[in-house]
Image 1 (spheres, helix red, strand yellow):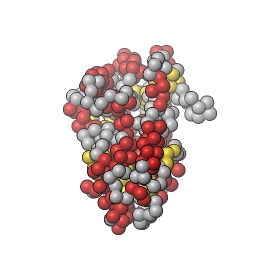
Image 2 (cartoon, rainbow, N blue to C red):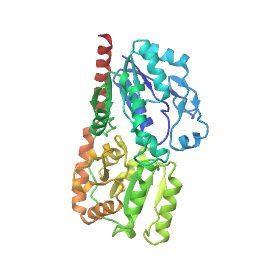
Image 3 (cartoon, rainbow, N blue to C red):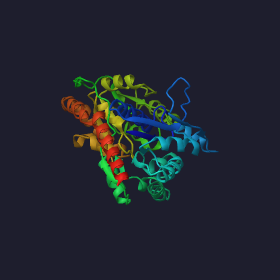
Image 4 (spheres, helix red, strand yellow):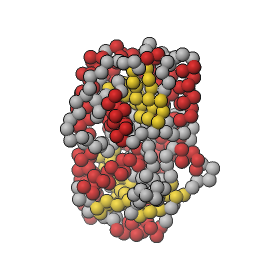
Length: 384
């Protein structure tokens, strides 16, 4: 089976969609699928390159904003696209941007099977344009994605039940299949290390520093926590809100709310695992999130999460108890949850092992098998 993945940018550091594409394609190849990539060239000349490389399309005025959000648009070179689509048995869309619309038209023309994965809510795009949660862009954007790409697919992967519900509410025609993008698991189950609230109390937050990730919620929660003077906040990621978050953290230190300076940095996978293993809590603040595998990657190491809950947050499905949830963007509620876990270390240690065990239910190999079946079903449907 030959599967063409169509993705604007598969090589951005710190971009969850890009990371998911790379892991998925690697897994497919290990399962005997000939998976190839059409995307913009990797800016790192020593790094891997797409099988069907496209030039980088730079948007006038908006390119700096796009770059800081870890994204890049590809030029829709029809010569390259026709070559790639002609090669494929199945064309798989990772987005529904202008590139994918051009590819879809050619794939329909050539009679190729077509599938997709839904990775982004319209609200993700709107947030990066500094628009409010409710804005006039969300509705037209989801309709454009649906009509331009997804309604021309036989099957669409939904990483969470929340995504499936959202797509049904917006009348997607494709068959919707719910399965996680999955994560790589260690061969041996993780044994969570028992912890007591130390000095400092290590709290980890992983993700792009961006509006929709809402790291401000965690920072402002320090004003309401009874233990703020003992807490060390570690932010792992970069993004357009990095300077803002650093300024807010510095202000909290100057005002005496925090006694330990917050830390900011970008880390590779092994460094993130080490940070998770030494931390007392993991906080996932995003108010819009299709899946949020960074949360699972943390809990896999035996750490208790506190996750924002809302109608556009797929990550909340990973919570195993009410104390691991709070209303998204509510700093006071988040502070209450943080304080509860600090005051209940025995429960924290018991749940840390439960979270490590639960993460094993999201094995990327199971996701790959579900994806292969979806591709085969799409091929069969295209032949009928």
